[in-house]
Length: 129
Image 1 (cartoon, rainbow, N blue to C red):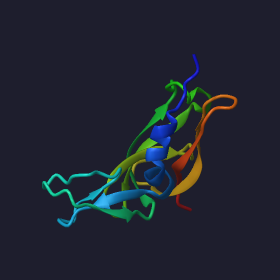
Image 2: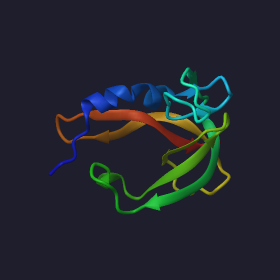
Image 3: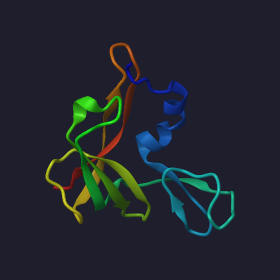
Image 4: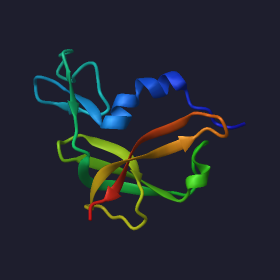
């Protein structure tokens, strides 16, 4: 059975997927993906757009992919500490990566749900040249 993405979920996540938009609390804590409440207890967080540059702090190479990503193997998933502070996960399009490499976000197709299905776009990372 083919994997199908949720159109409503894709719509709700479009800001964080398309523009790396997170949230910031008045206490200074930054979140990506966005949150409605800070760990300090405040609930008046404001949107903030991150620059998309960061450093790889960990990674793994995927050889057995979840449904919908089988055609992309092998690929690298990394934890990237953004220059602004939050740590997020994402695909790194380059093959030879290592911890400490500097990356930048790029806009790419993430997956296709078969013929006539939803095409999801969002950010991936590439090594900074």
